[in-house]
Length: 336
Ligand SMILES: [Zn+2]
Image (cartoon, rainbow, N blue to C red; front, side):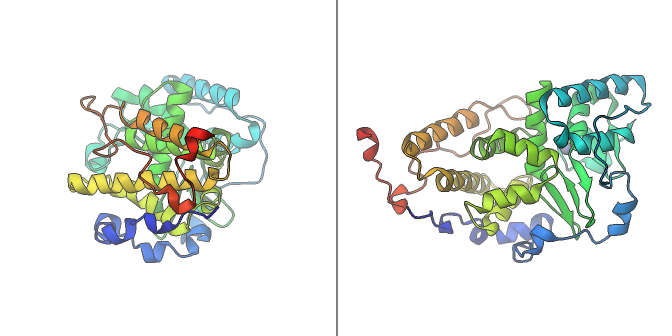
């Protein structure tokens, strides 16, 4: 069967203007091969930093001498992670925890006013900063960043699915969404990235939980891209990531939001279709995946707990992508 064409996605035509307005993203520049293999400009800075990845394999870690209120939470975190993951996937955690520092910051408003995640942060100095009032809810999110951040021998800074170079950050919201998804799964805590959690959950459903978790903990965004490139072009992967960023822009009209969210769903469907189209059970699987998407997108409240986050104004339907392009006839479904 044919691979579905990529013309179905039109992130580029619609929103180049927003791309530039938002954060200086220039898709023509980003989409080059350097996206996969770029090095951080300031390599020396990261070689000196606490999170520089050495080659030492660790079986465990010593919890540093933190304030009592933090120490118990860090111990809980490490135990929970060890109960859920293999040691080989906890190497970033073991290394970073040993020299981790955690501090309260009372005044966050000015620095993070534009960012929803204004309750805590994890820095490349291997430091967690937390707002006092809510620290017990936020610390696990920041510890997950701690457990998934590294600087490799080439000087590339990676944190979960996030990668930075030339002051351009990629994968930021994919990474925040997955961090909150793991926090929900492992610690029953809920973070602010509700929409992003839905998207990564939908993506994980296609890629597989074990694989996604492994890629995340190892800071392997390159591996995630390689996985996705089997099913679509690198351009679309980067633009999918950009679309998640554009949606942070408060100036978007409802029409623009609907459009971007629709493109994100189409991206997910294309990945799903190209991965599964040759399976005998494809049509049933596809229908189930669409129900799964609908179940996610129509049950979640926004961050004020008031109204539902809707992915689009309408339900996601099986007709969103024309399956006949693939030579799949829908009426075959009933007889199979
Ligand atoms: Zn975060």
